[in-house]
Image (spheres, rainbow, N blue to C red):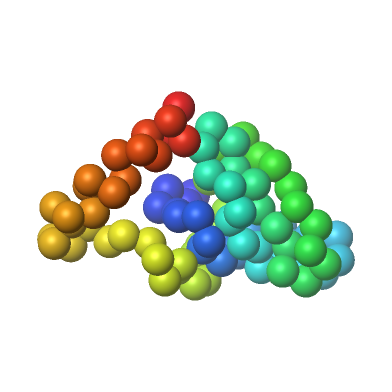
Length: 87
Ligand SMILES: [Zn+2]
């Protein structure tokens, strides 16, 4: 089960896609997760829990993902307007 993921991450799913691809990019996060197959470009919307169970691992973490390793104080102000996304 994958519990840590961010918008823009590449993830590998337990099952291969019908096209044979096994890499997906997270294109939307929230109550539902939208992932896009990097091979055929098809998008799939999954319930968050369904996605977490179906995902195997992160292949590539999005460069812009804010890591909680300190120095985050400045970022909080700029992210204040995004709280509605998480509802
Ligand atoms: Zn595909």
